[in-house]
Image (cartoon, rainbow, N blue to C red; front, top):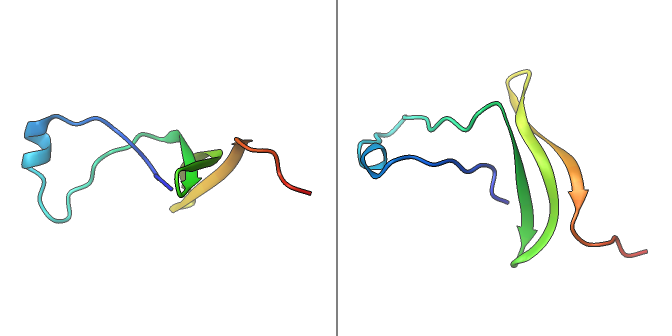
Length: 64
């Protein structure tokens, strides 16, 4: 899945060096997909120093 997205300028992109960080903010909703099929949305944030994802919405009904 895509863990995060943000916007940076072309100048910022060209000036990135190994070890640089791109800030993504505190919490962000991301969509997880597989082979182009949307699966679910989740809130991604940092909790106790670890990246965590909390499911917020399914895109497809679960099969029984």
